[in-house]
Amino acid sequence: MNLLVTGGCGFIGSNYIHYIFNTFSDITVINIDKLTYAGNLLNLQAIEKKYGGTRYFFEHADIANADAVNSIFEKYDIDAVVNFAAESHVDRSINDPSPFITTNVMGTQVLLTAARNAKIERFVHVSTDEVYGDLSLDDPAFTEETPLHPSSPYSASKASADMLAYAFYRTYGYNVSITRCSNNYGPYQFPEKLIPLIFTLASADKPLPVYGTGMNIRDWIHVSDHCKGVHLTLMKGKAGKAYNFGGNAERTNLEVIRTILHDLDKSEDLITFVQDRPGHDRRYAMNYSLAQKELGYEPEYSFERGIKETLNWYKKNTDWLKDVQSGAYLEFMKKWYGNN
Ligand code: NAD
Ligand code: TYD
Image (tube, rainbow, N blue to C red; front, side):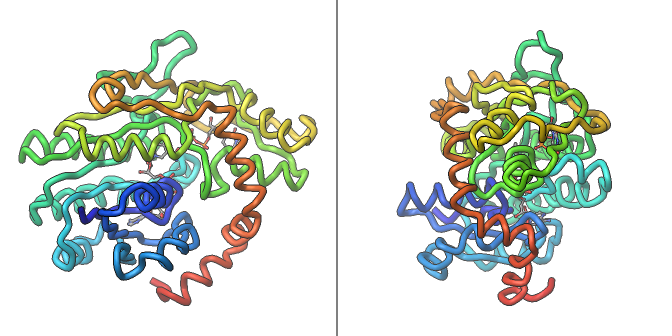
């Protein structure tokens, strides 16, 4: 199978490409990435070295650029698309929603149109639990039937993309499925997101910014469980359907932060309560029984095992962290791909 992956240089996309090469010997990957601040070629250096030009091909392109996307569909004999590419950070979307609409909404539309025109048989669109809005403490977990009710410009853009995917199924009968997953953690996550951010700051004995009371709840899933869920959806998911994925690990932000502090043997005095995020979702929780029943999905990681392994990965990969923080990796990428 020739698989087109978008956003493969980001956190989840690069973990997915690693998962593909570690698990299958008969899949070729074409990775389209715009290399925004979140896209990092270092994440796939080992894959590029081993499989570059034979089973792995990188295309530096923007999914919202129809000409570029169409020419990639012409160049390769693609069987299926998995769309990870997105602007993904809620706080950035609050500062400036515009790139979120361009990439997450228009980019998805361009990609769906190009894939359908090129008669690509299968398309998986990677979405998020955030499209459902939030839950109170005693609400049941989100199901795929929960109405979409997004809170932030980020989640509104993801919900819009989901609606386009549904429309392509309903209007054109296009074979597209949607995955919706809770908060991921694991190797290669950019240190603007809670877990790598707290690791980085606490390691340097810097204050840890906790929004509001720190009592907001997220369901945490190890990225490798999410990657398996995405691949099961690609292989077994039904057209026009969305599948929820969760990690069975609802934790308050304070619980997560204390776990990290305990592991690093750092003082809780570093915790610093700061002004809350506007529109901050109270709680996310996932009912993923549909994925269990139809896809055979089951998360393998407990939060305790996953966070331990993840923190160990960050401790071992301080160079990676330093590079993504210093911008050295941007220099590295410029050398290979220029300034565009
Ligand atoms: P990320 O920000 O780490 O990576 C995004 C990648 O997309 C980067 O490599 C970036 O360069 C690339 N990209 C951005 N705009 C692009 C464009 N216009 N064209 C081509 N490439 C572009 O994000 P992530 O955390 O890996 O998330 C991947 C997907 O999973 C997103 O669709 C996100 O909404 C979804 N998701 C994320 C989480 C999470 O906890 N991180 C949870 C559920 C769903
Ligand atoms: P984040 O990693 O940004 O993911 P999301 O907003 O998509 O869930 O944030 C996870 C939780 O941590 C969320 O409730 C916001 C909170 N948070 C902080 O308290 N301080 C921070 O500096 C960040 C980045 C997040």
